[in-house]
Each structure stands twice: as structure tokens, then as C-alpha cells.
Length: 549
Image (cartoon, rainbow, N blue to C red; front, side):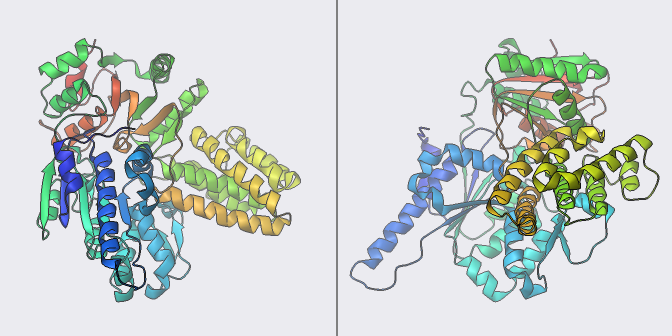
């Protein structure tokens, strides 16, 4: 790509402030500018070290490195991959990870210092079903990482590693993430990217200290300065969609920017759609956009609705990837892995049913555990058909052997008639099959192969649960509304339902909900289609229905 920075972007690149807060709207090039600023910083450090080394025979100083922290590695990695030309030879010196993957890495390396020897990761779904000591849950990772940072030797090691640390979506960092940033930085510069208008995580469970005021906390740090990028979208250079989204965020639905987006067809809204035809209508819209040559982002709401829509699109032949529900995919991978282990004699059948119970629970919102999951765990009588299919699978797996078991595991979702998560199950097979094939080819002894497989699957599940595994690119990507930040596509389809829950806001101006709409409506390069299902849309989105064609 060709990157030509504007005046404000050049100011960011040339800056050497200890703390630099860079603010800009969706698509204004914050991450690309940050990549250029990181390269410029590393170049300056290299030049300074080279100048100091002239005439001296001292040991070569350590290579300067950058750390790029975010909430989802995949969204940032997509941008950094596209900015490879900007980073050039410095790309290998930029470490990109998520806050939780970073915390898990610290725990694995130094855990014994605080009594965490050989820690195991437990997903939130597993925590609903099982009680276990000596495990680390998602919510435990950052507190334990901060405990490690309180150890002087660990803290000093980290403070010496990076000369610049970048935090993306900084306005959404919570108290613990902010403390981690300021603890590990040492003398490193902080480059903090944010947009108060995209602060959409403040009302989510467990969000402590998340809010636009986080930017104020950063600016209170010594040597801090703020630079605002021009409100010009590089994602949509016409600025038609971003301007319309900004007006909608301000609840100005009759603004000329909204009218322009509708008149030009860049924004298309359909309302009052029958809920019982949701999958058919969505499939038709997606198929038409694909026929026009578009990469499509499809945005739904909540785990239940997104997973259900994915299953229905699969049945209608719409090839897609479902993004942002790592526990569903992890649970599917664990269940299939358990079947392979059972086939190889390394696990008993109880483990298979436990893993299936976790998978069934993973696609359900809230703390309620489905009755089917309890049945799979032995608390109740299984439906006769499922019980028979499980018995058939139990008999077939050992006869198939380790390699053959993958095929049986792949077909188990359909064979067992599991209620949800078909696409996740298929994706898990895509991860498991090549892993098993590669390991069995290299390790002929079954026991050795299964041991290696356990390690490989362990790494994969860790990457998924900490959002550190890059997700596959596909021409159609389905995700929840809260997973849309950092994403972009040629065209986007936003599915809104009368029974969707957008939080506890009851009255205008719906500040938090409107920021969510702004984020969702700024992901498209060319066109956004909004589909409202049902006759009674929630007050947050009801004004959109009045704009429908």
C-alpha cells in the first residue's frame, strides 16, 4: 500500500513525547499512522545507538522493540499486514498481542514465583459447569499478571524490553489494563490510540473504569500530549457513510448527511421485515452483494442470535466464517479432540460427554446452563435418539483409530443432531484435521502422537481463548455488533431485531447505544445495508425504521 501522511499524521510520526494520545474517528488512519510512528521511533533509536557506538568497543546494545497491545489480535494484525510496506524491515521487531494473551504469557513464564506452577486455562463456559482448583479463568489473567509485575525482577525485565508501547482502542481499556500499561513501560514511550465516540464496552459486565475519561487519565501522565487526526475517512474517501454514521450517533436522523447516504444508495434500510424469514432475507442480501464482487461483513447481536443465524446460513449454502465467539470454537475443538483421544485409548467416554456438554453450553447467552448439557453430564435422562447416536459413536471411534476418528468427529454434530454451533464445529474440524495428520505422520507411535496432539491443541485453545489467534479471512464474515471494531469490508449487512437488547438506557440520547451504532455503521468501504426484523423496533433503532425505503 502507499501511505502519504497528512500534516497531523506527520506530527504523530515525528513526535517523541513520552506519552502521545492520538484521537480520531473511525477510518481516519490511526493504526496506519501508529505503524509509521513505530518505524520512525525505531529508526531514531537505531541511529542514536549507532552514533554512540562510534569509537567504542563496548557490547552491542539490545535491539529496540515495539509492543502493540489490543483487545483482538486479528483485527490489528489485518491492519499491520496491510501496512507491511510502512513498517518495512522493522515489522519483525513489532510484537502484536492482546492484553490477555500477554498476561497468560507472563503467567506461564513466571507463574511459579507467585505459586502458579503449570497453570491450566478454564473458559467461562467450563466454569459454569465445573468447579476446579488451580486453574486460571479469563477474568483471573490480568490480576495475576499484575501480581507478577509486583515482583521486582519480573517488573524490571519487562521494563527493559520495549522502547515504545502502542495501545489500540485505548478508550476501552479498563483499570487493570491501564495499570499493566503504566507498570511495564519503564522508560518506553506510550502511543495511545483512541476515539471517545467508539467507547462501546463501558456497560459490559466486568468493565471497571472503562469510559471516555480514560483519555483524561492518560493525559495526566507526565509529558503527555494529544493530537487529533482530521475527521476524514480513509476507509470511505467519499466520507458519505462516516458522515451519516456521525449524524446518527448524534441522533440527527434527518441530517443532510443521512439523506445523502440514502439517496446515493450507500446506506440502504429495510424495516418491518418478518422475523420468521430472517435467514432467507439475509441470505438473499448477502448473495446479491457477493455477486456484485463485495467482501461482506455481516453483523448480528448476542451469542444466541449470531450462532443461530450462522447455522441457518450454513443450511442455505452461504459460505462464511463466524468471528468473535472463541469459546464456541474452543469448545468444539475440545470435543473433537476428546473423541480422537478416546479413539486412541487416552481418554474415557466420560470426557467426551463432558466436552459435548461444554459445547452445548458455549452457544447460549447468560449464566443459564441448557438442560441438555446437564443430561450429557449425567444429571437426567438423555433423549432416546441422542442416547442411541452417542452409543453408535462410542462404538465406532475405537475401531477407526486416531486418524479415522477425525472423520467421525467431523460428522458428530450432524450425527448427534446437536441444536447449535454447526459452523463452529466445521471450523474446529478444519483446525483439528491438519494437526492430527501432521503429528501422526511424524510420530508413528500412537501414545507419542496423542501426547504431541495434546500439546498442539492446548496451544490452539489458549490462542483462541485469549483472542490471540488470527481468525481466517473469508468473503463473508459474521460477527456480533461488539466484535466489529477494527473490522472493515466492502459492504456490510446489519441485522437488528425487535427483541434485541441494547442495554439499560431508556431515553434519548442513548449515548452508549448510539456509539455502538456509530461503530457498526462505519465498517463499510462502499455500502451498508440495515435490516430491521419485527414490527416493534427498540427505541434506540426505531428512528432508522422511519428512514426505510
